[in-house]
Image (cartoon, rainbow, N blue to C red):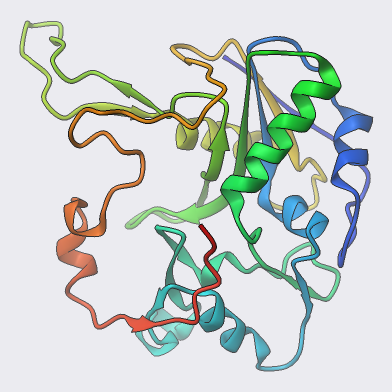
Amino acid sequence: MIVKAIKTRKFKPPEDDLWDLLSAVLSLEENSVVAVASKVVSIAEGRCILQEKGGKDKLVIKEADKYLPRSLAPNEWIIHTIKNDLLIASSGIDESNGAGYLILWPKNPQKSAKKIWEFLRKKFKVSNLGVIITDSHCIPMRRGLVGISIAHFGFVPLRDYRGKKDIFGRRLNISLTDIPDSLASAAVLEMGEGNEQQPIAVITDVPYIQFTEKEAQSKKPYSTFVIPEKEDLFYPFLSALSWKKGGSGKTQ
């Protein structure tokens, strides 16, 4: 697998032209996956709020589906939130590289991913193409950030090993590979977290990927990419806390 981050011009809040940016720096071949940082997608959609003293917490709560008070976080560094079926800090709202603006998540990341996919397929005349909108998050009990996919389009997100056998003939019962987040993690590592100015990455020679022109759906049990909260392995931890209802900027 080859991951190549793309250097671009500065993409400036509160609004900039994503189609111009993509057209200027990309050259795509069949069977590519394009990773785009959520921040540039949000700026293109005008999802930028001028930062005011004390205003971020109110905005985080407004954008969250559910949240925990800041006082519950160590050193009160962040507000823990659940947004768009993801456990993410501060509803995904970020200040870095924002030029004095708070950058929200795209209004509907899944629609944004599909729109980028449609544009790139037409622009570069390719059929097999995937798109991932990336962000960064923390893994419990680990310091540092890794990439995550907040939306994807153009490929089947799960590789299902269930029913197959391991090298010793043991039947696999629960193993599935999460392709969008695996690719997002590799892409964000290349793209960087600081002033690298590389908000786009192209991934090629992706193993096992199955491209599709529709949102992938499976009729098998326990096969949805997004897991219902009560079915999640981490539900005992999630349910042990008294989450508060946010304003929910979520759009489906």
